Length: 432
Image (cartoon, rainbow, N blue to C red; front, side, top):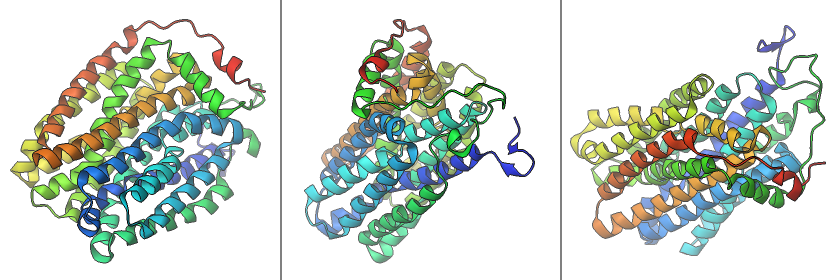
């Protein structure tokens, strides 16, 4: 099917994908902001890296655990309503941080409020849009939207780091709040829940194909837990959750949170380190988009095994790279960027085999929760490691070996046994 519907207008699926891309880009930038604030908060308010890392860990856990419930809420209430509420939480949470004076306030605002908001706009949002609006090019669209989600975590870091250095950390918090508020009108104007809302079909569906009426889920909480109960009987689910735990630990939790202070330990300015993370985001767009294209053509478990193995090698080399100089570090940034979240498209594809296409977003929401639990563990553990040992090197090396274990888990996904799928989701949360 051609990109153009008729001869003049693009298929509305591409407009929805464009709005989703921008929203994911912004929301992931909101989530990653505390990584820029670690040193400024330490110097301004006297909080230790371990204390600040605790708040970041809470943010990362909720960023993941919100996913399955957000996916179920999108089934029940619609994508647009959930996205608007999530952006509102990001605006309120980040805006109020400019008044905080105690560590518990950082945990509440950046950890809980922003964590809930960004968690509703994470990869489950990308999976829901791709699954609902696309039949053709679903893997490619998933890759592009996932790239937006990951790249946003990195692309805004130089801007936020520059604002922090020139005007203080409160200016960065205020900028995030304003950006979240400004995104709301765009979502209300252009984002739609289903193709039927604008009188069309999902991209790739023939015009003469029978139309299935949209099904509205029941209680979102019941739907989310029913999806977990169904998926938990699958060995593939636990293998994917285990490997994605390591994925989160080695990206958002470790590099996304601690690369800037680690580079600062080796004499690099915060703005320069943030610029390198942003460069990871540029390469991530290429790597994750290519991964989505490959997922449509190559065995997803083989892709995952290669991705984790190569990432592990890069992490094992990072302590030496940081101590060596600029050129090896640039090579690391390019290599790691290509692999940053290339794991997401094949993981989503394998989730569809756990409990069926209809439940992909909910099942992936729980797998993504494992991803963020891993990120939270790594964010906190790396902060403690640096505080206690004076170096991030043990954390990098440990993460490298964990990636090797994740490669073995991913390779085993296709060999795991899965019990027959029963309609548990429908029993626990009926669709009307």
